[in-house]
Image 1 (cartoon, rainbow, N blue to C red):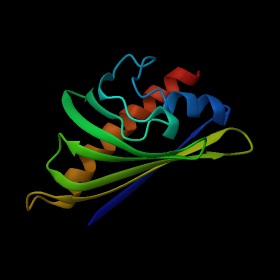
Image 2 (image 1 turned 90 degrees about the vertical axis):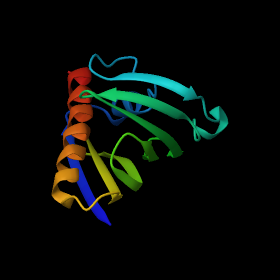
Image 3 (image 1 turned 60 degrees about the horizontal axis):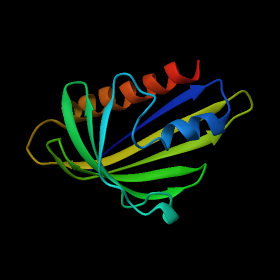
Image 4 (image 1 turned 60 degrees about the vertical axis):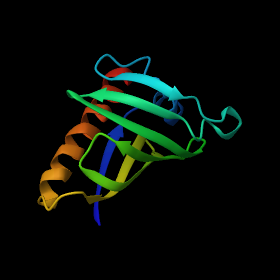
Length: 138
């Protein structure tokens, strides 16, 4: 099983970061197109929500598994990449001068491709999302 993690620091309040991360329709994003396929359970912070995301010319479907308010979001990639058992967790850590997001992903490849190749594409997608967050908090 492959694993990767990316940390990104923002000089802004954790509440602002949390609002952006839980905007599951990506209404404030200019480069990410999102379509909600199933709304999820509002009483459980939208757990069960399924959405389709268009990013960097690719289309993905993901399901929000759990949301721990102001701490973490766990999700599963359902389709759109040559992988299975893809799970991600996005953590929000308040810091003295701002907020750190830690994005952790695990997956298994569907093909005998080199792990680094799949990681490279995943890192590119995650960094695009983190860049969008950075543009939104400035």
